[in-house]
Length: 145
Image 1 (cartoon, helix red, strand yellow):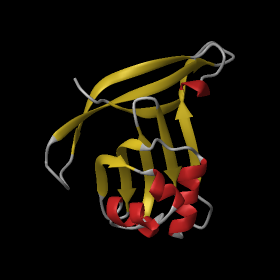
Image 2 (tube, rainbow, N blue to C red; image 1 turned 90 degrees about the vertical axis):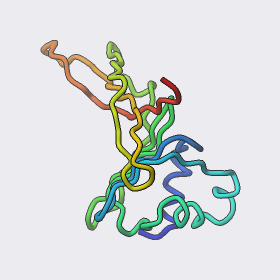
Image 3 (cartoon, rainbow, N blue to C red; image 1 turned 30 degrees about the vertical axis):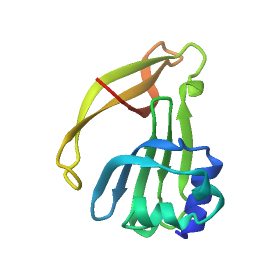
């Protein structure tokens, strides 16, 4: 995928300007903080790709950019356009609720070897038979424990 198309998708979906990045590549996983400045959106969009995502968009399989309020998710499909969406509390169906799984531990082997923590927000609803199901989820940044 071309870098310009990749960055346009992120900008158009209103991804969080800073937070945590979880990027799954063909050959590795990156989990680290990130920050995109206004200049990245308006100027050289390749800077973010080259500095923050060193394996380039061509090897990317899945990308999650998230903060404590929302998540931008992009999934690359072979031979098709990428699927991307912004997920926040507004995506709840009527009668649904959010359930937060707190303090899921992560490990950043690529950079520091330190552990981190992320919350998972599950958006839960009931179907027509009143069976509970998870309609969607998002990752949530934990700034301090």
